[in-house]
Image (cartoon, rainbow, N blue to C red; front, side, top):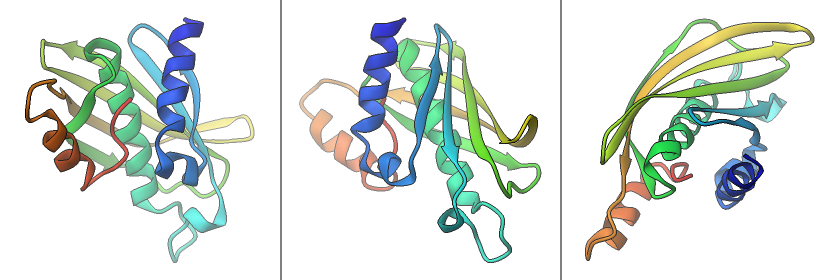
Length: 156
C-alpha cells in the first residue's frame, strides 16, 4: 500500500488548488480514501463557519480519489450531490470516501465529511458522486481541458 499512498499523494501534490488549501492525504486502502484539511480563518464565510465551497471541494476530491482506485488515475467527477448537515467551525475537516460500485468507465462513490475538534468527531456533510474515466483517444486532450476548466480539483 505504500506505493499506492505515494502515488496518490503525488497526484494530490500535483493539484495547485489542493496545495493552496493545505489538503493532506491521510489514508488510502483498496476501496477508501481519507483526506484532511485543517480549518483556518481564510476558509470561513461571514458567519465564522467553514465556507460550503471548501467542504464541497474536499468531498469532491475525496470522491474522485476513491473512484481512481478502481478506474485508474485519469478520472474526473461527472456529477456529485452534497448534503450539508451542520456547520464546521474549528478543528480539521476529514473526508472519508468509499468506492461503492465500479464499471468499466465510471464509478459511484460516497463520502462523509467530519470535523475533528480535539477528540470529538462530528459529521458535517454527506456526498455521493459519479466518477468518470477519461479516455486515451484522439479527443482525450480536449476532454481533459474541458473538464479541468470548471473544477480543477479532479484527477487522482
